[in-house]
Length: 257
Ligand code: BTN
Image (cartoon, rainbow, N blue to C red; front, side, top):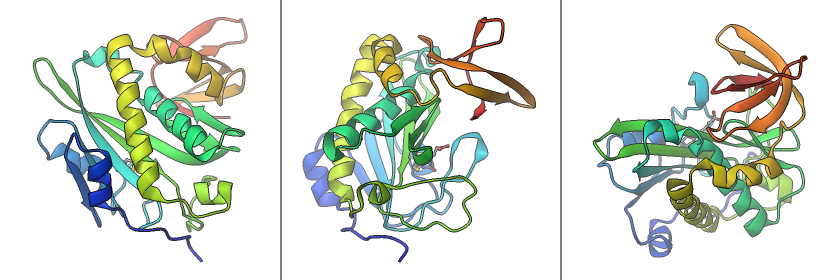
C-alpha cells in the first residue's frame, strides 16, 4: 500500500471555512507556486491533489504524488519592504508546528530546521518555499508554498529520510480540516509579522529550533563553514559560533549535520 487515502480536497468546504478570498483547487498542476504567479495580486489560495513539477529550495524537486499530501500556496500581498521579508519562511514554519501541536497533538520530536523545514525525529515532514513574485509601489506579492507529507507511506528513490503524519500518528489524516487550520493560523501569524516583524517570533523559534547548540556545516556556493548553531537573529539569519566563540550571521545556505 502506497498510502492511506482520505477524502478528496473539497472546494465547497474550503470556501465555506475560508470565505474571504478566492480558492482554487486543482486535480493536477505543475506547481501551486507557479500557478499563483499567473494570478492577480490579491490574497488567494491554491491547493492541488498532485504537482508534476513541485519545487523546493535551491532548485530541488518536491515529490508530489496524487491525493495523499498537502501541496498549497498562498499569495500574500505584503506592505513590508523586501528587506524586512527575510524571516517570513521562519514564521510560516512556526505556523505549521503550532497547528500540528494544537490540532493533532504532535509535539515530541517535532522541530523547525532553519530556514524552511519541519522535521520529526530527524526526518523531513514538510518544506516551505517562499518566493517574491512582483513588487508594486506599496506592495510585495509573496507566494508562500507549503508541502506537507500527510498520508504518504511510500516514496521510491528518495535519497533523504522523510516521514508523514500518517506514519507519526498511525492513522489516516483528513486533509481538508488540516488545510483549513493551517491557512487560518498562517493568516493570523502573517498579520502579526506584518505589524511586529520577526522579533515577536524569536522566543517561539528558539523553543522549536532543531539546530540550536548543534555542530553543523553550512554550505554557501562551494564554501563550507562549520560551527555551533546559536539560533537566529532579528533578520532571520542563522547564527553560527566558530571555535574562537565568535558568532557570525548567515542569510542563506544549506545545512548538513
Ligand atoms: C523545500 O523543502 O525545499 C520546500 C518545498 C516546498 C514544496 C511546496 S509544495 C507547494 C508549493 N509548490 C511548489 O512547487 N513548492 C511548494
